Image (tube, rainbow, N blue to C red; front, top):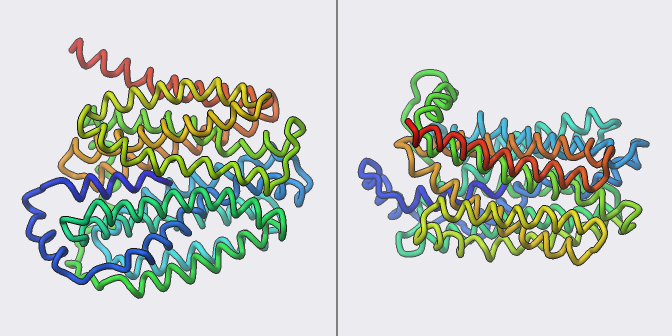
Length: 414
């Protein structure tokens, strides 16, 4: 998801003395194929959200209801959280060329298996594996930030940010259009071909990295995550608040196709997919949010983002009866999500002396929160309709803010 971008920016702008010489050497190395990296990032990011606009078609193929298969979309976020936890940290110790190539092939094979699935269980398993391997942006964005010339680093990172958001929008818009015309299996098969092709080409174009031989278990860094979060109140707060924000977004956005293609609006899958164009508003908000964090601090920006999200929940509820309210809610929702993302991830990356491990903790908690919320949204829609989905989003926001507010109050009293 979108969370990788701020990690790159914060890592690029920090002046950590032990890394200064390594960074200088990186900036003197040959440039990276930026357009290719942005395109590869877009394609791989799209895989996480590909199932959401296809839920009505998947339900029809397997003789179920859209709300009955909504859990398939949430599986993708669980898989991505697992990939972040196990695979993303390997970029600090292993050759990223090889990692990008291997993970791209694994994701492509899983997508191809999903296209041939004969039931929802097999489809969900394939999406789980594909999403776990779709952490290529986590490997590419830090590389771009480290190797970009100092006077153009922000522009290089912004190009990859654009790729991330374009991929998320393309998953909903193009996925819906192609799925309506040719079927959901064609969408997954096409994604498999693009993922394999672009992943291998990008891996070949990346520079070779001479990494020192690693001692100890490959996943030894995972054991440090609980202690790091426990020792850093700011990191813990960023993790919980972004889990609440991303959970609210996931509940509303992954269930939107159920409302738009349902009896209230009766739109086709292709038309409903066009609703994803509102996600482009996020690309305009990101640089603005970054400037506000620099001037006002992360805390104020997060509070403002939560206020925007609190406004968007009733707008989405009204959207169950008026399409114009959905339009407004979509814009406000993405503005709040991106502002919260920028502020929380900046805080997470600057509050400890191990930013890579902190970023892993932050992103895993964020996507886990989103996966749980979207998993609850499907049954809520089946029992209580669109109002149930909005209730899940509202509760997630309340939990994300109230939990951290109570914890902060206890630390002040101490």
